[in-house]
Length: 110
Image (cartoon, rainbow, N blue to C red; front, side, top):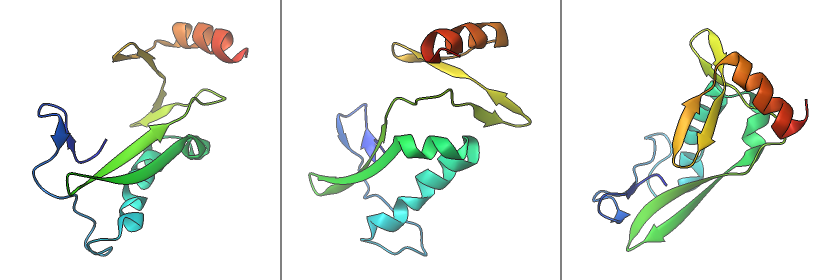
């Protein structure tokens, strides 16, 4: 959730600010920013698994990014290298290459 303050259990104290060129009150234009950030750091085919929706909670705008399971491994571009991260419970771990090979084989059969 973007615009949501976990510590206080509710929307942040200031309204969601849209990019200046988009103007206030046009969340469809704000959707471009998180999608562009994701596309910059992930392969383009991963975008099919992301959905951005907007909600009003107590008069505040909240952006929800939903990520569906991928049907293939998705790597993060980090500088000059591609990195594979695995979500384990509530933590995220970068896997070394030998573990990536084992995990990809068991998860996607390849």
